[in-house]
Length: 354
Image (cartoon, rainbow, N blue to C red; front, side):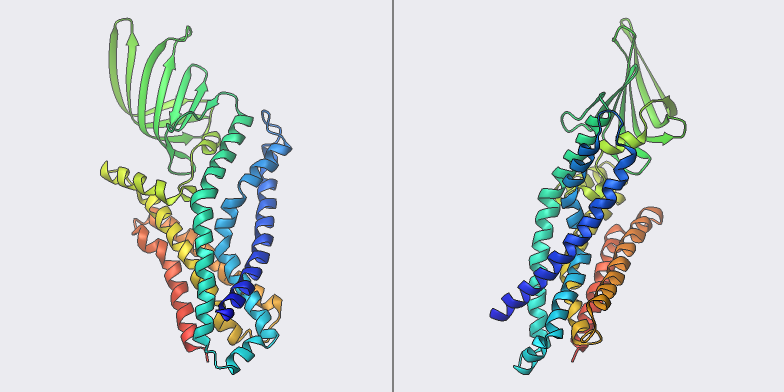
């Protein structure tokens, strides 16, 4: 029990140090990206800083697996450099027992990741996006759960969700007359942002009002000139990777029940689950390194190894995300593949460590 507390304190200290550095760098990059938006509407430098601060929980959630690996390498490396691990081994404590204590630290970090990723990051991300949109545009409303409402001349647009950088779904188009009377209502299940400030609406259906008469028409596509592009609507519509699990699952079931493509949401769901479990194996992977090739190495070598593995894990997640969408591969299998590989490597190396 004393051993568990000591190793937990060591691992937590290393992870906290690394996480603070990574989050600070991520926040700096996010603030630099805001420079192009500063000065648009009422969006100012203080607003950009507030936007970055609200995005810190999401950064923590995304950086935690990498920080867990590097922090565990640094913490356990300090124990190895001070011969404390050698003393533990000489006292009859097996490597498996040390690995168990490290795994407990990983489980505790996983619980922290669930709390941050499910209950703290999503609402703060939503608040940040809405604050930015309110500052940049004065013709937008986020009332209710119906997505973003935008007034664009004589058009009122409502977009329910975003399925890609330039693709949106569930768009409603309300066309008004010059005296603000409702002239037509249209709906498109999918909408693409086309170059030149236009929208390409697919499977468009419309009801047009003329006096006491209502006429309807349908079209496979409709080109709709609009002054509001996808860049703005991207501020209002949540990225599936930033939606909490308890909200993603009903979306997946609803889309599947209606025969719609839910692969991007399925991958986002299983990716969040797998990335959370990866924290345990990332921490566990530090054990064979500090007992093996990195036993006498310096901090720089351990940090480099951790960065290489962490970046490889991150890139694998991104490549497999594209594979799930482009190649019609099973989202669950691809989402779990990097974590399963990490788990296999960690468990095999721990078992072979002497």
